[in-house]
Amino acid sequence: MGRLDVKQLKSSKDKALYVHHLVKDLEALDLMLNNGLIEEEPIRIGAEQEFCVTHKDFFPNNNSIEILEAINDSHFTTEIGKYNLEINSDPLELGSDCFSKLHLQIKVLLNKAKKTAKTKNSKIVLTGILPTLRSMHIKDDYMTEKPRYFVLNKALKSSRLEPFHIHIKGVDELNLIHDSVMLEACNTSFQTHLQIKPNEFVEKYNWAQAIAGPVLSSCANSPILFGRELWAETRIALFTQSIDTRTNSFIHNEKESRVSFGSDWEKGTVTDIFKNHISHFRSLLTSNEHDDSIEVLKNGDIPKLKALQLHNGTVYKWNRVCYGVGGGKPHLRIECRYIPSGPTLTDEIANMAFWVGLMLGQPEAYKGIHNKMDFKDIKSNFFKAARTGMETQFVWNNELITAKDLILEEFIPMAKKGLEKANINATDITKYLSIIEDRAKSKNGSQWIVDNFRNLQKNKTNFEALQNITAYMYKHQFKDKTVDQWELFNPDENLKIDVSRIVKHNMNSKMILVEQKDSLELVLNIMKWKNIHHLPVINSKKELKGLLTWTDLIKLGDLDLKSQVKDVMTTDLITISQEAPLEDAKSLMKKHKINCLPVVRNKELLGILTTKDL
Image (cartoon, rainbow, N blue to C red; front, side):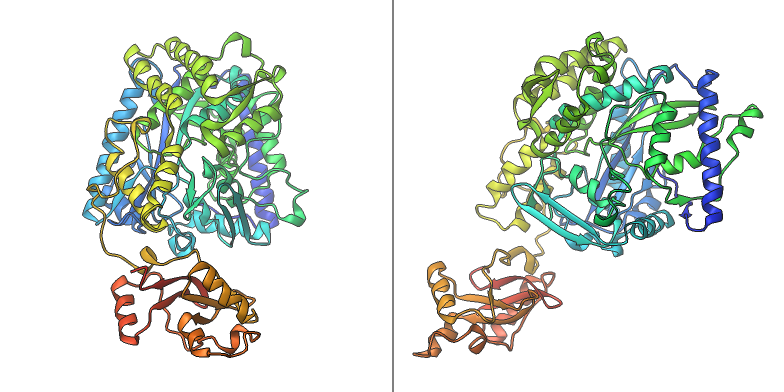
């Protein structure tokens, strides 16, 4: 959970003071490591459960603060988007039925959120990326009104000197230029924490890197963003690009994005990992609450390393190093950040048990993993898994192996041994690892969403299809069936979707467009070939300038077809917004006796709505 009481690091004086505290924090950490002050036992686990808040129609709602205040529970906190919230679990000692206990605690807290959201005409949804998100939801209007988020946004923008350019290519392609850090709000995670003994930390961190790709392939569930089918786990590509302080002209200064997998195996101690981050990434934020950590240690107290933690909170490694103080004792842990939220709570706990089991079950043959596998293979595995999920072929132990075979033949037995070593009870081991096994044999969340999206597109618009998928996920997120058991669903089943329809529900956004200077003969033939009765006309800036209809062409008679579109197009247009109620569109078409309404935002053409679409 990031600190909210921050300000942008600007003046030379502030920078010098902050760096001074940062260096003192590193010195203090080294002293605690050398003097055996870092806690080794008992080992604890914990989780951060992010979730989305939606309207009754399953589109994002911007009332998370109102819901948070009504919940009135310190386990809950804000996220950057007004349609996101986060639950921070209590730390639990690793052993026995700890996963069942965590499962129950998060379920109780989610039910509390669900009941409170209902009183605010809202719903909560567990999902890596909310399928119904639209570009309007990443504007600053949807940013949570807390200083940390606005300060971070301002700091990142001033560091970049240019807008964020998002380019993700999957089955479809997303090209987006955006001037806000709000793209981060699209990502919803189930972040898992495992306490690590200090003398094992670097070894375990490298092992966490090694297993990341296969774990991600199993739990991927975010293939859709803004109606486009992209990566199996699109969050990986999106988050990497949305918190990137590099620009094209300055990319040599920082060779990695602040959201990254890393560039090599780690060496030395945990302090060396922090030093590496500080060397590569300049501080963006500061606070008025810094202590002299060395003095705190001399006084017999444990420092919170506030400056170091603040810097660490702006470096978003997929496996992140964390320092914390609990019960007056300092500890170290690894935060696994790549596991998505949802699609069911049971799936999430299974993902966590799988990861923790693998972390603890590292066999002797894989000790010193940095000497046995090429880091570039491990990094490649991670991004291949993000792109293709369970269809990935990994390089593992210098051999090619499918995700399915690696998970079933090596990783599940390994995770089982790790959980047994931690004295997790047999019931929990069987329950949660069997979910991972069944998923490897059938499908993960990403495959389920893609299958249903393509099926629904046969008789529904993208907008309707994504609304139906979200409604289904909401209905089943707390039920016993995990995603591997979900099938193609009937869109007419009782999903209880708000039936209030807007223009975007029915409009056609897959249009053929013509330009003002196009040949009339060409356009006439396009309309014949494609059986199209209405063609929007745009200029070089992609702005709507007119409309050419079949009726217009009939009226031309024997006019020379070497004319240009602009000579005959209709320019006195009646248009409508995509947010307008569908009934308004019907009334407008009836009133003006027209069969086509261009759908625009400002001058930009978004789609067309015809009587056929209605």
